[in-house]
Length: 148
Image 1 (tube, rainbow, N blue to C red):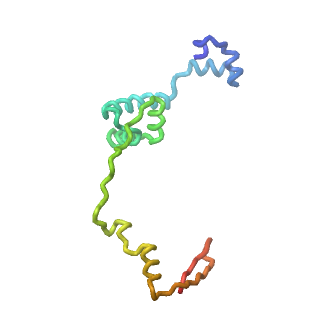
Image 2: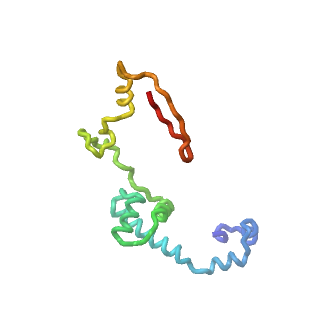
Image 3: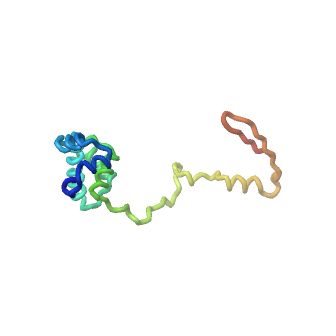
């Protein structure tokens, strides 16, 4: 790459603080196992992305590689390789998600005892309106107790 641009190798090595022998050794060295695996994974990712008509993003491609093909690959590796190749999936659906109309027991919003409802019940006419706060040290913090 340096020689292709017509730059002197001695100057480039001096600027990059690399020895000339290290530069020439790197040129003649075969590709590492990691770079070969990344090249192979990049081809697989491009095939999966094309098969999904460009819809799948990093999460789905990772799921397809691990669950569908049985490969052991990290999610961050899939993200990095997709970013290097400029591959992106389509954004999620913009439609509104349906909301359950009837609250269920598992729904946290179905509780009838909310802080607002408790305060309304306590501050009804004829109830106590003056409260006292007791502060006690508990573990790393404080415990507060409100009583009429």
